[in-house]
Amino acid sequence: MVMSDSPTISTPADSPHSPANLISELCASFYRLGWVTGTGGGICIRAHSHKVYITPSGVQKERIEPSHIFVLPYPQAEPSPHTDRISLRRPKLNLKEPACTPLFWNAYTIRNAGSCINAHSQNAAMATLLWEKEKVFRISHQVPIIDSMPNEADLKDSMKKAMEKYPRAAGILVLRHGIYVWGMSPSNHLGDVWQKAKTQTEVRVKMKLAGLPTVLDE
Image 1 (cartoon, rainbow, N blue to C red):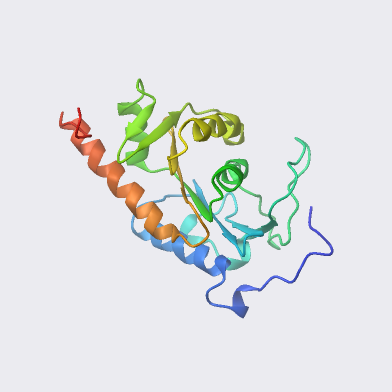
Image 2: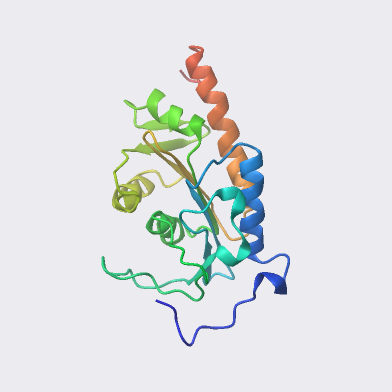
């Protein structure tokens, strides 16, 4: 559903620094670096505290254009199972919101995040298998691991419980799936947040496979 009386939204041509342009550039950059593949995962940014820009579902990450980005008002009431979230702008192409939109919303409502990324990283997926019994991946703090489900949107409740149990965690690992990681405020740079999470995950997976302790007190 698109709001007919929605406020004016800057189009990508209006500003080279618009969130839609930034998301498009990040997706292409992450693809070139090998951090994302295919159509999996997604990125969202909350701008000016009340607008959320979200990547579409089903589009190759390296081919996402600014005009493909959904813009949703924040906050808004939870939609019913048979209705869509309210949109300020939808792509002219017949594109769908990602199934992970409810999980992005968790990052905003529970953590007051400014940005969130869902990546199907091989190292993140491997970490969930190496620490499957513990259900926690330990770095400078603890990152909970939740079980995957056939429908990604159904992870919302288990993700919420894990976020409440581990209030210092800046990410959630999903078993055999990947990771959700977010910036804690709108001023956080999404790239910095993701780089730190990616680097720590890669290093500790290699340490675990080599039989080395991954935290100092082990």
